Length: 276
Image (cartoon, rainbow, N blue to C red; front, side):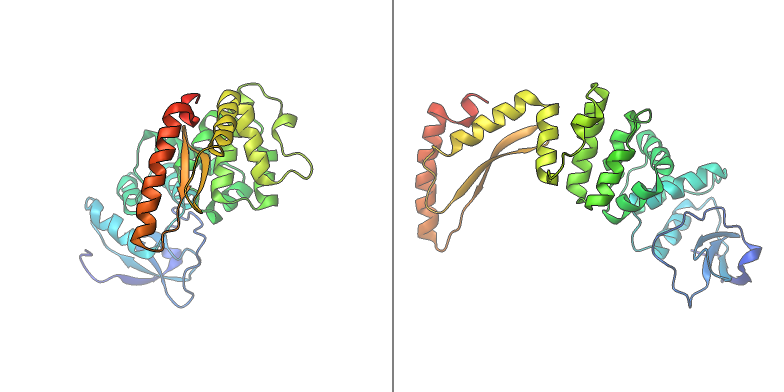
């Protein structure tokens, strides 16, 4: 990979223009690492191993960078991309580096990275801790003129999960863009996060919410077998039945299959999908 052994230098002899403030600290006992005088890892160290690599060999540069980090969050990758762009580092293989972390570089990714880099530091830290993906930030592309600080404060104050916070961001932005007033979207006193998210879905998709409520009620009248549990649920833009079974032996499974055939017949006559 490298054409000759790396040189040990004082870090002041190298450039730190790519310092994207990674969250994981570099081991104190190890020197920083640079490529052709540009530090890639260990930005707070005092000495650095400077590797000499042909910048035209982008795969080697990307592989070397990847070897320094076991993982990087979307926030860290976004800040890295911004540092490379702001400093005109055309040699830095950002597309290859992103692919090493299983993120596809595209025009859309580039736009999202710019938005992430401009987001409040509190949101950046929260999103990094919750391991938001690059795509999770997509709603921010259409929300740059919106006031989202109250929402971000809720994320942090309630320590929402990744799933809840990402869904809330999408619904919150869409509702604001549709003209819903902020007071109607923010959580009510004593309203827990799950109920709040459910209310946001009802506000955003009132017809779907009504149909889901009807479908859930219809499930209760179907002849579900034994100790099985069924609930009507929505995943993205699709809705359907989530069924849980406990099977202790093959005979139980056979009985469940026979019973589910009766459920299927009942659903064909008058089930959740008939009016959904």
